[in-house]
Image 1 (cartoon, rainbow, N blue to C red):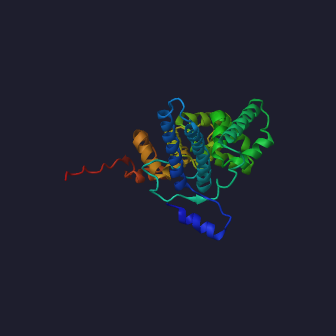
Image 2: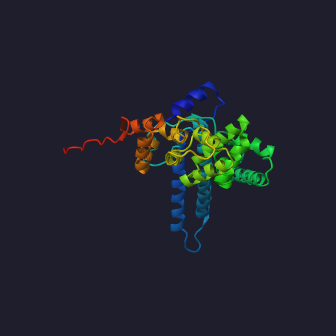
Image 3: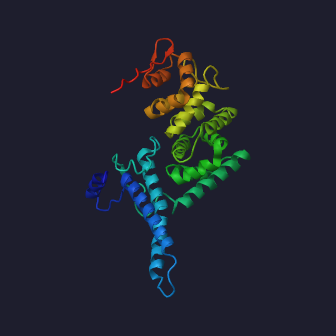
Length: 333
């Protein structure tokens, strides 16, 4: 299977090596889910046995089904953890699907393998820890108290744990996230943990345009709008979040947010557009969903290098104004 050569090479160098092939793990998760469903269907079909017929087989099948049903959750946590440490949130998380399994070689890593995955026994414990820390952060922000040192320590240690960061940012919400960014300013290690954890969380939580606007509006009220944008720019966001952030940036054309400190001639929206502009798939989605906003931006700021990149990647040309080049219609066979 794809990726097995990488595991074999690592094992040849170290006999104690354990690792995960993310593509193979995706297939295994699918197989375990299918096995559980098949056994459940068999149990349902054969549940009514005549009186006097031993039910030993049913009990054994039920035990196997219970075990198989528990595996996908554990395996998914391991795979997500492995992917997070392979990409560090800088690329979209691959999805397991019947049409794509084995289409591309999977990455291999020791992260997520072995007896322990991160610092938590299971996904539920990791998510619960993130939720608990978010509650402590929100309480500290509300009371205008410093965020506890123990919370910062856990965030630094677990910023690469998908389940922990999912629980953290789901409970924090946009306003709490803005407060967390503000509290981390001036402390590079803490700010790096916020960046990494926020980027990873975007692959497991839907950070919509509304969510991002809420974060930036709260950051503006706190006077840290530019700092929040910088965190988002370098966080390694999910493609959907890149597109949402870019659209927020496009709507800021012509009016810099209050307190914005980026000097002219740099347009104030460029930092919000850069993550999408560096991702061809995000560019295509941005044009597909917000083509009018992109065209208006290109016309308003033809000198913007980021907007020029957006236009170039989508087949547009700039000569002082924005002009969409429509490809010729395909002729019939």
